[in-house]
Every structure is written in structure tokens, then in C-alpha cells.
Amino acid sequence: MRAVVQDALGGPEVLRVAEVPRPEPLPTEVLVRVHAAGINPVDWKTRQGGGMAGVLGEPPFTLGWDVSGVVEEVGFGVTTLAPGDEVYGMPWFPRQAGGYAEYVTAPSRQFARKPATLSHEEAAAVPLAALTAWQIVVDTAHVTAGQRVLVHAAAGGVGHFAVQFARHLGARVVGTARESRHAWLARLGAAELVDYTEQRFEDAVEDVDVVIDLLGEEHDATGTRSLKVLRKGGLLVAVPGGVAPEVRRAADARGVRTSAFLVEPDGAALTTIAGLIDEGEVAVEVEEVFPLEEAGRAHRQGEDGHTRGKLVLRVGA
Image (cartoon, rainbow, N blue to C red; front, side, top):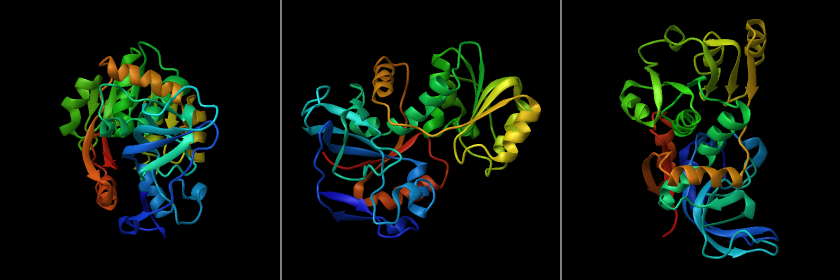
């Protein structure tokens, strides 16, 4: 089968398409013929030697955790899926899943049936970003109606889902994004928006219950600055890099809480998310779809940092 492999850590140029053995499903696993694979920041960070490179080990390896496709085979014991089922998922994260390939195998319950209203390219944009947002908003922050939720990088892959999930739960959502994204984010449910290129968010926002930091402390001390807008007892969820020691100490001094976060595979949550998508409650934004052979170009575009929603690789028909 064809797969995007890299033999060394480095820039987008290390990504190449090669012929590799097709995996075989073990008991409780399914073999999925991949139609499309989503691209996430963790992909290019791992390619460079950061991200999940410590988990994957030394190259060669194949990146990619977001897939949408069709079940080709099922291993012994699988009862929830059958050959021909259209599925999507985030298999194995943070271990290697090899999503930039024509086939992947993983436990059946790490997949869910694809939203019926989405193409495979659209569905491949969902799992990692949407599960990250869902597990932060629902499982970690326990957002409830009437709360104020600040989403940094609201126009990105995780951000645009976090806005919609928090709004779905009845929260008042505040987002940071370039002004050109404001009208779109307002349609998704953001009640207040701050153009971070023109204004410091801490000068425009206050009395927030939950801050979802998708930028990280290394990005202009976003975590430290976010503590200033949280009300007493509020929560900062720090996604890239976790909670820096100095941020935790400052949070303790201000009487606010902090939490690191890393997404986990969750087929049940993907089933719930698919229902929200098919009901029209949640929209999926794909900025561009690239052929598998142009994974390097897709990474370059993603690293530019101004993607609206997600980038996707088209793998097979």
C-alpha cells in the first residue's frame, strides 16, 4: 500500500510516498481503507522532533491520527462494525496510527460511524480536533449553561469545535482570532470576539469561568495572561505543553485552577459528535484538501499558522 513515510526528523521535505506492507487486523481490530486523513499541528511538531516524537521513537514512521474510510476486514470478536461500514476515528493516539496511508488497523471501538452528512474529506477533519474540544469542554471543564468560556485560537481546528460545543451547552463564548474570521465565528456561536492583532485580550475580557488555551505559554505568555481574566475558582486548560510551573504558581496565588490536557481515542464520543453534526448543531470547516503526494506542501501551509479550520489529505477513492 502507499503511505507517507519519513526516514529522518526535519522539515516538510522529509515526507515522501512509499510502498509499505499493508497491516492485518488482530482480534478486536478492524482494517480500514482510508479515504482521507486529517492534518493536525501535532503532526508537523512530531515530524520536526517535538509533539509525539518521543512516543513514536526514531524514524522511520508514518504520521497521521485522523482518518475517515470504509471497513475492509474485521478481526475476531468485533461485533460493532462490519465490512462496508463508513467510519471515522483517531486511532492509537499518541502511539503510531499511520493515518497518512491507504490502510490502518486499530481496535474497533476507537472508530465510530462517519457522520452521514459529511464527505470522507470533511469527516477526516473531525476526530482529533473535535475530541480535543469535546474532552476539554465536557469532560475536563464540565462547562454549563451561563458560564463564560474564552477560546484562544478560536478559528483553528480545535478552536472552532470548542466554540460550538461550549455554545451548544449554553455558555457565552469569547474567542480570540483575526478580524477576518469574526463573522464566521459569530455564526458558529461566539458571542464576543477579540482581534489579537489589534488588542490584548486581557484588556477586553474579564470574569471568565473557563479559558481554553490552544496557543501555550511559549506563545506570548498566553497562559500567564489568561489568569488575569479568570474569576476566582475559574479554570485554565492548557493544551500545548501543559501547565508551566510558573503558571501553576501564579494561578494558585490568584485562586484559580489549572489543568493540563491530552486527547484520548473515544469512539463513543465520536458517535455523539456525529449526531450533533448530522443534526446541524455543529459545522466542520475544511480549508483545503491535498493529494497524498503533497503532504509536505500541506504541512508547510499548516505551519503558517493561519488555517481556518482544518487541512486534509485525500488518500483514496
